Length: 425
Image (cartoon, rainbow, N blue to C red; front, side):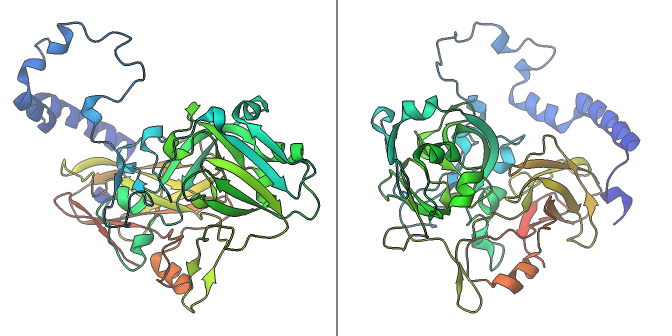
């Protein structure tokens, strides 16, 4: 790959940026477009919004984004499911910065729609193999010592529509079943100590208060490790679509075990049979057998800019390749970027903080010469796990599943700057 298509030097970047900045001030496309749409608001004129008072402090008691950002929303795929009550929508990853997903943009996955729950009437019952079965109110739970942790949450079907080939037209739909928030609540281990777990106990069954009575079996070892009963999300109460007033946060594990609207935990000595547990997510293998309890979301990454929704529309010159990486095994230790479909790799810069079981931002500077590119990112986590190619993943798991597809993703950049979703081994 010629130097003009690779990583620019610091001096070259600064020199190029100064030249580009001067050109933009004089006759740049961005300024020209703005003058064409509203020249009266551009220098040296005083813009209209400086000439009158704006709304006061009580005009919007709960703040909302600017109306100029109204296009940044969750979106669904209408043909994906029969009804919206048992469906999913997608986080607009290409429009976000940092690692925290705004509450109103966190993807949703429901099995029976969103229940409207009065927290004063909501209860959490813990029973089964315990010394003291107890029922907790929300006020009870908030009296316990609290913790706050930043973790990603990902549906195991994220990317699952592309096991057989590239299908989705943007990163919102190819990878948007993931978000990352600061979760506040009480550790599940604290409540289990309160009820006194008996020695034969090995598993728990968590049940939600939605119309589907969503239930999942979770190993007791994980419950005693880092699971949180979360009542707050990014500093405010959990949104209804994300589990209000109480949900499980099971760090690093597939999203469906993070039971929302949590109302009951039953302690037992084995996983529950399907007659009591909502059908489990399983992975159909090439030999016809199915894997179950594939809990961990393995290392994954994707470039969020450029992408089909954010093409390289300014032509040749400097761009910063940006993306996210995450792993259910812990921290991301490295992200490599390829410009040629995996033949050559260069290490990207990780944005701090780099947290365990959290989204991690990466950046890579590019001086683009207008030639076609095959952009890829490859994450490595602290356990040593390296994100696989789609070919390597198919050799092990086939193409019959829709879950746990965490392979390296490819964007094709065309000479005109358009970006296309493609698959290469």
